[in-house]
Length: 136
Image 1 (tube, rainbow, N blue to C red):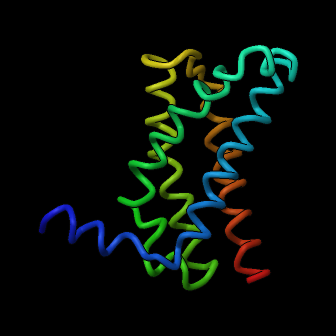
Image 2: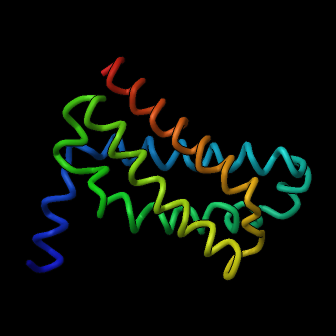
């Protein structure tokens, strides 16, 4: 099986709203977390700082969400199928984010940070998807 046919089975156009919502939720979660450790004034003075916070996790997300099937046809059917897919995608994506944050981007990956980020990310992504299917 080649990469193109593999991804064709993992990416469904109907999942576009889920993809946009997932990224917005991740960016919001990471921004709120950053604001717990810094100030709005600091971020306004150094707007690139936030990009460095987002990048490791967005890279992990872009790699793993399609591989796990977060945007497959099954993900757009019901919350019952979509929520587990987004949570299963978040776990390896977050691990990649932690590694990149520790070794490539600024920041560290302290155990407390990893636990909080894993749990809150799963709750935020799963909650957003459950809400999406409730109001859709």
